[in-house]
Image (cartoon, rainbow, N blue to C red; front, side, top):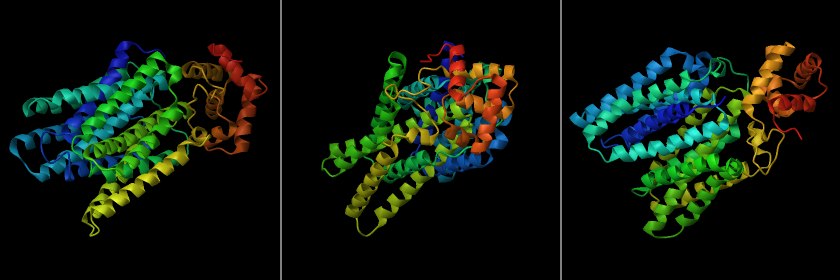
Length: 463
């Protein structure tokens, strides 16, 4: 499916407005009590709590975009947070109001994130990368623009942004063809525990270090984050073959290593650079994992709701890091012990990241097959949408069952027999039986011939 410019604008505008809303109210607010202390903690607690609930019950609520209540509930929660934020800024309602604003804001934003993720998951991975990156850039621009205004104008933006974001996401969904919209089913699958564990380590390190960040580091890190997103956009548009995901996965470990080395040096500027590198390591790792999750959803048919909720739930390790940092600050050993503990944990995170991300078979273990240009691969250069449409037509022509259609789609995308079995949670004998039925109904003799047939019909290269 080819997207028009209007569709693209709706997708990344909705994401940008929602991220700008969170930044204004919680990341760098003009009203006290939200950007630090209990305000941020309550936001994270609500965010993680709703994510865990989504993981447990996602099969009962997907697709979220086809139901009315997720849209209404998300709008209601974010509106309550916005109104409470404005009222507290004008009237000074105290910590109780800040807690309510943070709890409703975290819940509403998580729900919006899942709804928006379902809309994005209908697109090809290249489009998803482009939309997410442009959305990050625009959200930084909006936050920078609104942060220089007075509180009265920010109050208007705080109330309006959630409705604009939801309207943009809804407009994007309306432009998705019915056959490409999210399904209400999800195959059995294994959670990508390596990715989640790695993000847990990075989140813990970031939470541990968050309380000691130098003033202004957050804004500089956001600026560099936007610059990284701009670089990704340029690579996708101008040189798509140069975007190496294996290199992108290794960037966080490099940032952590540099930050760890700089921590041993003295000087205010050196400390700021070290803090910024550690913050950037977490942001880059999160961006990369998001890309991988969208790829897994697209290729394996896993609901993006459970994958996105799993990544959101990992923020609990950030809360744990904040707690450990607080305990270290209260310890009798003083600042020296705290600095040593920080250094040891960051070094551990670096080691874990290197071991997890430098393995040659890491991508296949996670289920995603983001093929780098220099790595080759059977499905390199094959248009996913064309293969999916061809599989659907051929399945109708051959009279395949629902499970045989799933097997056909995964085999056509180049997954190995073992990967298909893991994705569908079926035994080797069951897989071979389904494959034999496909061969009998289609008249082909093997997986290679089957993939060649499908790729020829789509115009893909079949050397």
